[in-house]
Each structure stands twice: as structure tokens, then as C-alpha cells.
Length: 163
Length: 113
Image (cartoon, rainbow over all chains, first blue to last red):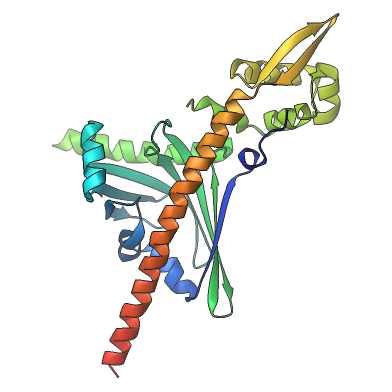
């Protein structure tokens, strides 16, 4: 049998934009930038916390706003707003950004942590953007992402103890 | 879909064993020769692959022959397709938002003369 070539590889998407590399970087790494496009169609995003450094977290709320998405979430018995977290593993402005994110919004597919790598390269007056997604990241990565979560949970536990 | 599919393939040695089996059914010794770890290591990884549904085994006289099963790869392909489609949609939004940002700034710099 032949193993599917695409499944064997990581997912790779490539785009070129006529823009400065700083503008493209800002779209990924600032509150305004992220809120302007992040999230699937029909959802709006509100950044709650942005700690842009290796080990730091992006925390945001994703809310269904368009009618079909609102209806879908209601039918599925899910809340309209979902709290999401990503943990940065590499922050090298304005060229490389990597983070782990739990994917829990693909219908019929169980949540799984995926490594996202964004690479930006200036090409004259444009920028080449390459995205690589890897669900089969190595154990070291998984460990680091887990540590990030544990730190977060530790803080939460402390905060709850105080109240 | 099971998380196990990714966890199973996260290990580079198991990926090499899967690649070795792409050419067809093989005995443990053949796999040992290709992946360059000892027999007990290969057997252990084959056990994990078999438990996760990637590999099946059949006896052939004194030997046991291992081969790949298509199901988990089909699952992976579905996942890859869904994820790619999702991100293509998101990148359309990204392009629109970037154009909007540039236009807004151009208008502002014009205003300021």
C-alpha cells in the first residue's frame, strides 16, 4: 500500500503579501493584529492576555457572532464563547514565531495540540509567509507546552485559594 | 479520531519503522537492518504500532511478518484535509485584514499631509 504523502508530511501553507515584514509580524503578535483576523469565519476574537516570549501565553476568547455559527453552537449545546490558549515556543521578530495550540474546533475530530510555525521572509516589496503545522511534534515540545499549562494552572489554583 | 494516532507517530523511530514498511511486508530482522536499532527495540516499537492499529502481523512458518494497516493513515489524511481547509479560510481573512490595515494607514498619512 502507498502511504499518503500529504499525511506523512507536516501541513505547509505559503502566501505572499505586498506589505512590510513588520506589518505582517504585527498581524500575528499584537492585540489589534490578532483581533482583526484570528478565528474561523463567523467568530470574533478578543485577546485577554498576550505574553509574547518563549514559554509565554496567548489567551483569547472566541465568540460566535454570525447567525449560522451562532445557530450551530446552540444546536451543538456549546457556549457561544470559548476560552482558548496558545503557548509560544519561539519569538524572533520579525522572522519566526512558533506556538502550540489546542485544536478543538474541527467537527468530528478530537482536540489535539498542534505546533504552529510562522516564517516570514522579505522579498523586495513583498513578504513571503510560510506556515507549518505539525501535530506530531516531538516529546520535548510536548513537555514544554505542558509546563506552560501547569504554570497557568498553578496560578489559577493560587488565585482561587485567595478568593 | 484518536489522539493516539499523533502520539504514536511523534516518535522518530516509529516513523522510520512505518517508512520501512511502506515497501511491503517485512520480518523483524529486515526492519532491524533498515532502522538501525536492536531487535528488542524494534519489537517494542512494533508492539506500540500494532496496539495503535498501524501495523498487523501474520505468521509465515517460523517468522512473523509485519505490514501496515490503512485505517490510521486514512484518519490522518482526514485530519490534514480538515486542518488545511480551516487555515486556508483563515488566511483569506488575514489577507483582508492586512489590506485594511495598510489602507487605513495610507489614509491617515495622507490626512496628516
